Every structure is written in C-alpha cells, then in structure tokens.
Length: 120
Image (tube, rainbow, N blue to C red; front, side):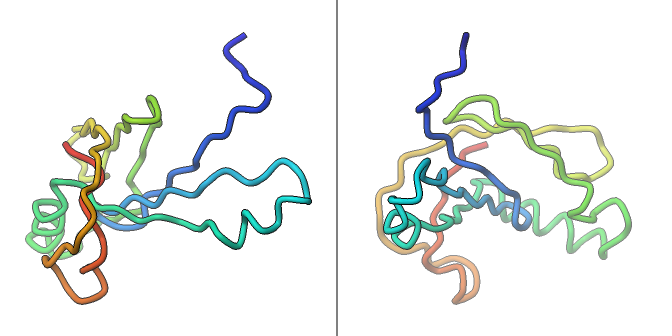
C-alpha cells in the first residue's frame, strides 16, 4: 500500500570515495524522450570526502580500502546510509543538504563544479 504507481524516484550510485551520483527516474512513456536528453546524473560530494580519501591514501590501497566493498542503503529521499568498505564495520548516515550554487574550489579541476550535497 505504500506503492504509488506514478511516483518518480531517483537512483543513487556510489561513484568514488565521498562521491554520490543521482540519476533521475526514467519517463514512463516513450513520448517523454526530450526529458531524457535534458536529464542526466548529478554528482555531489559528501561532507567527509577529505577524510575518506585520506584514509585510502594512508592505507596504501590495501584490500580493506577497496571501493568494491562499499555498500549503501536508501533510507528516504533525504537520507542515505553508507558503509565505505573499510573493514571496520562502521556506517555513515548522510542527510541531503541544500546546495547554494557556486563553485567548490577544493580538489582537482575536475571536481571544482561538484558541491557538497550530503552531510555526515
């Protein structure tokens, strides 16, 4: 009974340490092809990305710091739970934060347009 036929849900994917991609739901009919071309994945950062990347760097890429061990659960549209596969059993609860626009000047040039979208 919680299922709503016309409800549109995004799909989330962990694409790197502290990086979460959000894919919009696909249109329900083939007439909405224009909606597909206007959409696409939106990649945002977690507030603890720096610490996650430092952990991986310090571990020197051992088997416990392999991104393939990462697991995530969608709790609500504004809440994700992620285990980063560090071998310690910890999970991090993230809540979505409103983005203010602008540029993230941290990190390399490929990440300058990414903003923090999930707060630990």
